[in-house]
Image 1 (cartoon, rainbow, N blue to C red):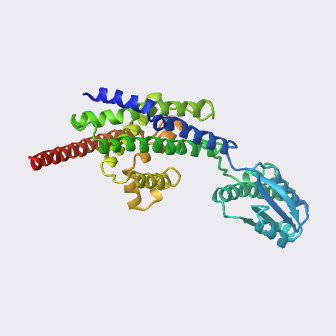
Image 2 (cartoon, rainbow, N blue to C red; image 1 turned 180 degrees about the horizontal axis):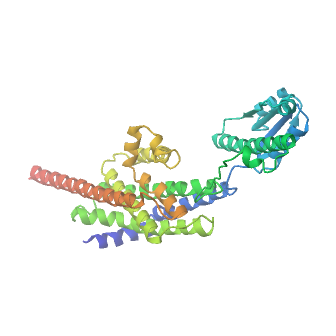
Image 3 (cartoon, rainbow, N blue to C red; image 1 turned 90 degrees about the horizontal axis):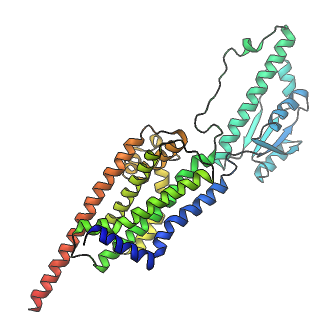
Length: 387
């Protein structure tokens, strides 16, 4: 029996007796896509609740407040009369940011002294905190520059004084994600997280059942292993194409890469994960224990892959561990291919995934061949004892 015959037999079994194993590859990642695509539909963090305590009540303080009112990053929920009231709003989480303008704010500005304003931020949510700091700094920079220009213009009467006060200005140009869209940042990684588990666990289960049922032990080990994993590779390839198509055309995610590169990357990941599953299946004694362990490993794998927190900022041992996890070599490169049209290490990761798959495939074949030989020896021993 060839690997192709075994593949057809396994496909028939999966479709007629265990359709959930294949069905999950298409449905669960799609549910992730729908959930997180809707969750990140606003694209970025804005309308951060803001409370303002203006003890100055002057022209200068009102101009500063206008800056916060005119940005989409903040939404003023309340004006209070004392720092204590502002603290209460922050404590009760009615506001995430508080701006306290002191009484001597305008007086210090008019007399050429620097006036200090305290911005208090509820730091329990890191994304809100980072956004609030950046947005508040932008408002203060604009206000400070405009105020300085107006004061000096009134005092000196010099025209075009702006270029003398600020001779160099920074102009930021963010490539590939100019709006800092969280959907673009997270969705590809979350999609691949769900996809890897719906491919990895069913493949492991299928190969594990062969070790229990011993259905193909009298055939060549290479034919059996390839035949067992091939149905999942085929189904996963279709699911991969389907999910990315929905992500691009339904959730408006960017697609700037070469179709061949993306497909090579996805197929390499599928090859690596299915062969890894076949190796792990040879070591499993209790499948339900493995199932719980695999689910528990989802978050650690996601975190150490470098998809969110950069690998260069991780301890050396974590970086080396992440290198041997296939997810590390698809999540970030896929995002780069889709958003930027290229990845500086894309072909390297593609090569690693295929080499990884080849090593795992050979190891899996070796493990199954050793298992079959053990079973033959047991049968021969039993026959000899019987005689």
